[in-house]
Image (cartoon, rainbow, N blue to C red; front, side, top):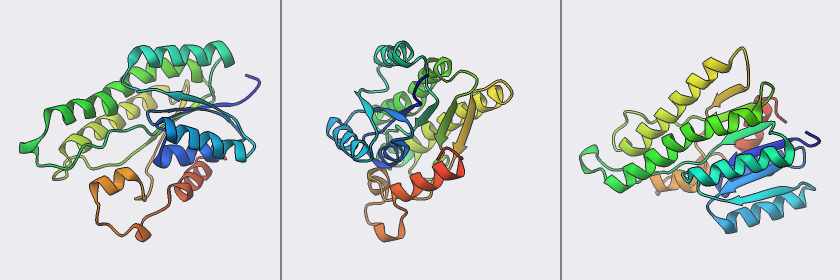
Length: 215
C-alpha cells in the first residue's frame, strides 16, 4: 500500500469520530457511520489537519454493503493497516423482564452479528501485519443493562477469541477499555451525570492511540 489506510467503523460520532480525526494525516481514514452529517463534519476536521478521508455512510448490519466496502478497499488500496471498531447500538436501560424485542434484536444485530460478519471480511485486508482494535465497555450482568451488556460482552468475547487465534500469525488484535466519556451513548444511559467529571472523547482517543503505539 502506498498510503496507510485506517478503517473506522462507527466514525460519525463519539469516540469513533475522535479516533478518526486523530489518525489524520498519518492515515487515510475510511470512515463508516450512519449519520451523514457527522461524517461530513469529520471530513471537514480531517481536511483541516491536512488529512484525507473516504466517507462511507453505511449501516454495519447490512452484510452486502459491508462486503462491497471491504472489496472496494482491497481493489483501491490492496488492504488496510488498521481497523478500529467503535460502532455500537445502545439500547435503553430496562429491567430484563421488560426487554423490548426490537431493541434486543437491534442490539444483537449491531453489537454481535455485525462484528461476526466484519471480522472475516476485514481480516484479509489486515493480513499478517495489520491491527484491529476493539473497545471494551463491560456491563455484562449489571442490572438494567440486559440488551447492551449482554451483546457488548458477547462482542468482546468474540474479539478475544480472534485475539488468541491470531496471536502468533497476525493480525494483531487489541482490546482496550476507555474511561467513561462524555458521549451520546453515555448520556443515553446516564442523562443526569455530571459531564465535567467525564473524559473527553478527544482526550481518550489521544491516550488510547498513544498507549497502543499507533500515534
